[in-house]
Image (cartoon, rainbow, N blue to C red; front, side, top):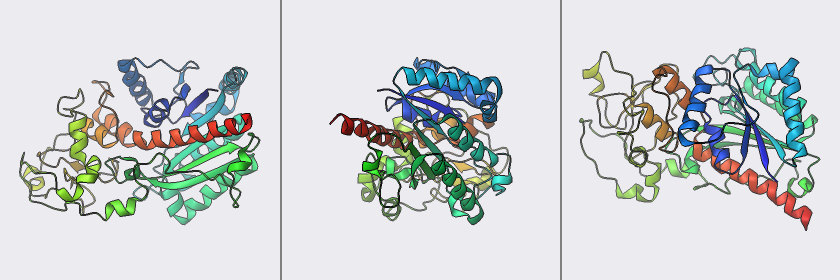
Length: 379
C-alpha cells in the first residue's frame, strides 16, 4: 500500500522533503508563488528526484475548488485510489495573519482565509488522511484559537478523527527553537481506526515516537552558553555541559552542511551601515527584536526573517547566509536554491518552511500508524 501525497502551499518543499524521506510519494504540488515553486523544482532536479506525476500547479488553492482544476484533482485522486493507494493532503497555509509578530488579521486577512480554503478542499476531496501545520499564534491568541477550533469542528463533522499538538523542533534534533501546531486527521471509516481512538474521541497519536527528545523545556533549561564578547573569527571550544546535546548547536550544523563552501554560502544581505554597531553585539545576545547574534554552541531562535528580523553570524561581522539558514532548518547539504533567485525570496522561502527533521519524524510516525491499521486488519 503506497501513500500518495497532494501537497499545498508547498514553498520550497521542506515539509514535502520530510515525507519524501519517509517513503511517501509526492504526486501533486501546489504553490502560489512562482519563484518558490521554481526553488522547489530546482533543488530536486539537482538531486535527481522525479517530478510529481500529477504535475506542479502555480495557482491559488481556491482554483481547485471549482472549474477545470477541480475536475482534474478529483480525476487524479480516483486514479490513485484505483491503484490501491492511500490519499494524503499536506500543507501549511501562509501564517502572517496568525503570527505573534505579524499583523494579526486572522481569518479576515488574505492569508488567514486560506486556512479555510485548505479545510474546504480537504472536505471536498475527502483524502484518507491530512496534515495541517501552522504557527503557534493560531492557538495561542484567543480570536485565532476560536477560528482554529471552528476549522477542527468542520473536519470532524466531515468524518475525520483528529489529533493535534504544539511541537517544538528542538525535540526532533533541529538546532532551532521553533514551535508549530500540527493537526492530523484520518477518515473515520478507515478500518481499525477505533483501536487508536481515545476517550476524547481523538486519535491517540504517538507524537514523540520518532523524536530525539521528549521535552523542549528541559532542553532549554540546560546550561547553554549565554553571552560572550564578540570578536571576528575567534575560536571557542564546545562547552562540556552541552556535549550530549551538541547536535542542537548551530555550529554543528554549519560544519555538517559545509556552509562556507555551499553553493548558497555567499548569499547574504550586506550590512550597508552600522558595522561598528553590530561589532559590539555579543555572541549569543538574542535579547533584541532584531540584530540577534547567534551563539555557535547554542540553538537558534526561530528562523523567520520577516518583520525586520535579522540574525547575525556568531563569529563573523555579517548577517547569516542562505546556506546557514538552511542548516538551521535541518535541510540536507545537497539542497540548493537557484543562483539567480532574489535574496529576499531565498530567505523567505526557507524561513517559511517546516524544519525537515521535524517533518520527517511526523511523517514516519503517521506512516507507522497507517501501516499498523492495515496489520490489525490482516490479523
